[in-house]
Amino acid sequence: MLAPRADSSSSALNGFEYYHYAPSMGAAILFIILFGLATSLHFAQMIRSRTWFMIPFVIGGVFETIGYVGRALSASQSPGAYTLGPYIIQNLLTLVAPALFAASIYMELGRIVLMINGDKALFIRRTWLTKIFVGGDVFSFLLQGGGGGLMGSGQISSINLGQKLVVIGLLVQVVFFGLFVIAAALFHARMRKVPTHRSEELPWWRRHMMSLYIVSLLIFARSIVRVVEYLQGFNGYIMGHEAFIYVFDAMLMFIAVSVMAYFHPGDVAREVRAAKSGRVEIDPHYKDATRMNRMGV
Image (tube, rainbow, N blue to C red; front, side, top):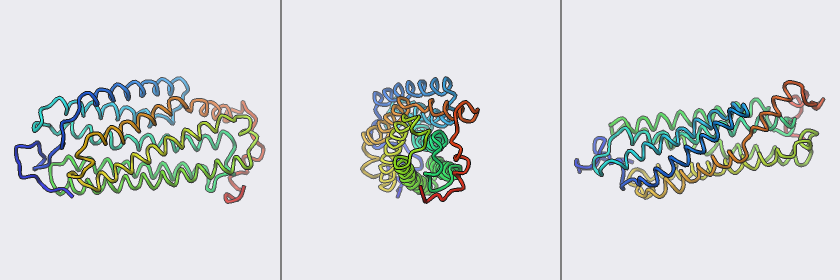
């Protein structure tokens, strides 16, 4: 894992070198601007459409923005004189932000199911679907956040423990995302085979499913790269090359944020509110859907 460096002149936490390269100021500023603009757009969309389940997604965007502010602060410092604060900010916030994106993704699927009366196409109850995936996401967030915090403790043993917790948290995220994509794909296939009246009335629900797939796969790919990064350790190839953090994390997450802005689920939230208020016709069999055999169609 991590071994202390003998060179006490390098920037260190008990001999730990913060960066194996000089952080790029230009790249950091670029992603501050990109995430800042995208997050502002998401915030405006959320307020306008009252899409409150997107609050974690917006917070994730704020984390990404502030994370790259921390990276820019590190880039403004001289090599060998990097300070702990900016390093922890950029490392911790960009690490946990995708878990917040994931929470909104999981909740959106539950609302799509509710909107088109699709409970009978699920293999588990819709309420349990949301609870299981959001619960797994929270667990992943806590592991990654706790690991990231330990990595800034200044003690080699804590840094190594933090690294292990981050890997476990990322693996939990990868497993739950894999299961989520499978669950969403099964639901989608069953709805295509035996559509409900509401799914035919609202055919645009399919484009929201596609956006969920795209964003999920982007976060999945990013998490796989981060797992490999932390498994290689602080002296590994990925941590030694800054391009990886921008190509396989910043860029993938910005694309994910952009996709969700383009296919914003405000119309999903609107239809769910209309259904709950009785302004739309509800499938008379919908209330019995949760009592049906979930493995059948």
